[in-house]
Length: 468
Image (cartoon, rainbow, N blue to C red):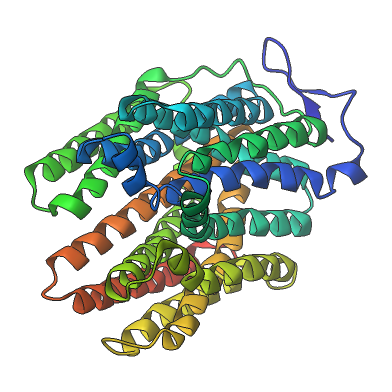
């Protein structure tokens, strides 16, 4: 049964206008939610090939150009838990739609920005909108598809959007920049955002509101500071090196903010995530697994992109095409794992996916110091397939461990750890490439580290993901 967003007191009542069960199980809610999620992830990577052109046309400094990319990532990572808490309190559909509206308007601001300062400000607002979209996306899917089999398929397709969007970003960005200009990298979000809003309002049932639950603003500020500082330090580590004072200071302040958050959570009457949830092996284990496989996958995508462009002289468009095998496998693996979950349970899928991805990165290393591109296709396909194959079961594990009242917070925790994993993978990959004696050895070391992360994730999955 669907529920209406309640008034004062946080009571949940049946919505008289709710769609019938057959309609709720249609593909429309999935399309609506995944459209919003696709925009969010696409904007992480689509900007990369446009940044040099933006810097020239807006006469931006190097720092300004860096903030065009990093400002979005920092706001997204920093406000995910806040977005999840707001969704649980005010209704996930309401917060999701608000995020889509903020994201769409901010994209227009990015496209129309006359200088770098206004572009960075608009990118920060875009990241805030994205942080409101992501936590609610999983909660809305859990609400729209209550049957375990349908939910697994929905989570699988949701997860595939991340891999497809992240890998397709350079391809789409290169195409737009080389044809109609860099402003279309942002303008393309406008019709997509409007479509997402229309589909969500028409086909996604309203979510329960729990207005009696107070928002713990000191804890929210502490977690925003911790995640933003950590992400900033990791981003800077890729450019400055891990021993740089600014990087070390950022990491130290992030740890201090995380400690303050932990203390506040123990004292708060209404914590962001109750301690009993964090003591759940499925919840915390699933979050760490998400961190590890994002570390491996996005580290691979980042270093592979640099390898293709700097060592093989591929254009941005050709680099996107070179990464396409990994993109195709993410979609196929997500659909397959969603169908298999009902028969096998989640644990075999997560474990086998992590082992296959580890084998893929190890295969890249074993291909030699300067392998021909065809030899790299199978390793990329294995990494893309394995990561996406495991994502469905990991998502179901985390969301299944949380009661409905905390679905937004659980989704936010999972996506926050994944975002940290992505930032760490990119930062470490960049550091290894910058500090190695030669580019090839740095690349191969990065692949070995990614393979080890996948193996650790496989071991955690065996212990933490529930059997069927």
